[in-house]
Length: 162
Image (cartoon, rainbow, N blue to C red):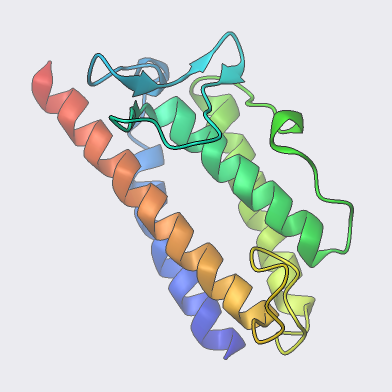
């Protein structure tokens, strides 16, 4: 199971690297519509209830979002006190954000190699005893794939709208 999860993760990561290699600092702040979620003055836009209409996230916001959920997942996986969303800072446009994601990848690979996949997951299903760490790793792969697709779509829209 670990090999399959790692293969799926590596496939997803290779798609993200394809986009990360092409991003410019300006891509992170590009707002594709009048209703967007962005990182403004280092603070990500957020609502506790889903707004209507749902804002289109910027690449900057998506990279913060990945860093947030992945950091909290790593906290749970390493049995650390999980940080609050507001404690997860965004390092900024361009290379700082890209390096942050690459550092999270390295940490995740280490954790995934050592963790007991059959143990009960404490995140993101805190109260469901049927969910294992393997489910959590599968969720990481799925969530990352979704976010990679969003980044890719935004990058292509920006390049083709210029």
